[in-house]
Length: 379
Image: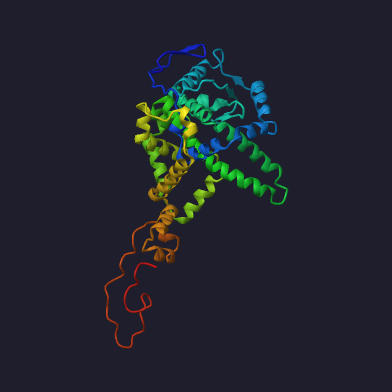
């Protein structure tokens, strides 16, 4: 338990006891889609060498100098309470080298972990002023989780490519090619944010504090005006509501983002906290870092595919239900397509249009069914 210990020569006494995870691998908390990509990249011989060679082309040195010169570095003399949280988070997740942390003046609540050779953590004043101690502890754990997973490397590359896309926008097809890579990186990074949220929960070990922190990031410092359960209900409504038009709009809204929507993150974290996987980690049964080299790429990709398939199957989103229907060969799919967008607001069959009735002699065919009977559902 992390109720008082020495780490890198500094003693800290957290406000309450927390479980520690010696030798924990980041695979213990990574989202399957995030984990499969990371396991594959770690298996590539010379991958780290290539990216370190790229460091001269990326603005990493400039960023480090910028934060050193124009932000406040967290230490036992500056933002000491954040320093305690940082060292405690590294102790809980057994990250040997504590990354430097900076507080930068920005009213927008935000935090990030960047860097190729060594990660650095940056939090804004807006975030520090918004969150209480337990909520902030979850955020610090979130960023330490990024560092342990190695996300900072790809985050730095994403920042560089996004900036490059703006610079080459005038070149025919140049921007298209780079933005295709950026879009793929953003999809991976959104999943990595879900991973880091889980790391934050392992560090803070207070689900309600994690929920409150996400809710405040969405709605500001008006906790007395907000309710966690109602906030989670928003995410359920967001996922299930509307028709195919809304599904398309959701995709368009999320494509330019590096983070999932806040309410969605809260629901995803709550779901993970209720799983057997989370309980096993808390009980001390988790993959170890010294076993990472033996992790199977095939198994990781299988887990990722299974996760996406499960998301589609269990989703209440109209588009995801359509995909599930196509995969399952739903009998009423053709009729729902003929009825247009409104046919996908619910998955129930079309109600019967009345009993069979005989056609009078000489009467024209029934315009609905063509044979005097109501049309049947199905293609």
